[in-house]
Length: 375
Image (tube, rainbow, N blue to C red):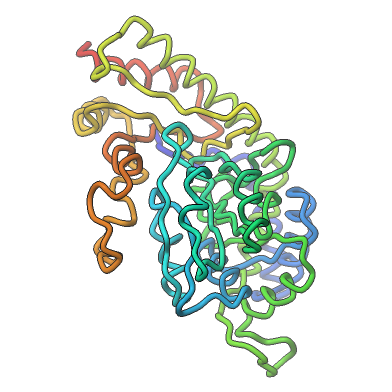
């Protein structure tokens, strides 16, 4: 069994993928070719944003957004410690200080109720992470940001396609940033990412920053990076967008079915040490289940037991950012963010992709039950 099955997906879209790649090979515009422009239009329409700026990765998009706001040394950016390193890493690489705020224990997203106390005169942005496939509490976050006149950059690397109160992820803040890493809900065949905004000036700045700060050929009014989306990756993503809405719907149904199966399997278990916590999706949200992540009391036992039964698992993420050696200088040791730390010790992700069958899910859940309950 595959943790993520990209081969089945490719067989479904291979004719379109191959044709689009062949077109690129024939016209030879490998950087910012027509497919990149076409993809930006398709993605902007899908998300419901005025502008889409394709970029080289979902990591570079975060840096581009920070640079567009002029964030640098002496500034602070509020974010979650329970995320992939790229979020805090790009804040630091911009020269700013990541200021961590603990997460909501149910959604694993930043706890909006704790944000305002972390705001100082140096706070220049809030960067919530829409983890595991659903958006953070964006209305509450945006309200705080408006009050303090600071922008919100949604790190939506895992939530592209998800809905929040009728709006799509990436269109629920000043800037939305997403990733097209191959394992993401919408994945390229290499690195890629995109930025979304309704702000004309901000879009102009981000377009320039992704091409070395260039506003016209060989004219550079600002510093930038080499952050362009390759035309070949745009071609692949255009082919995948043809089926992406169906895959989003499939992910939602699969996630619901996983939860129903697990809850039924453990319904009679009252011992907290033998319970499994399934994902919580807020009533006003949908999740694309970039990962289907559960909580267990003894993760090492579950990892080993599932592996012995041929079921792959993964952990997203075992060490919160404040406990990473690279951020030791912040002086936030164990106990600083207890909910993030507890999640880091308990979360484990099960196989998840749009082509999982009910039989495969049943196999995963039966193995989980056997491991946890000693079947």
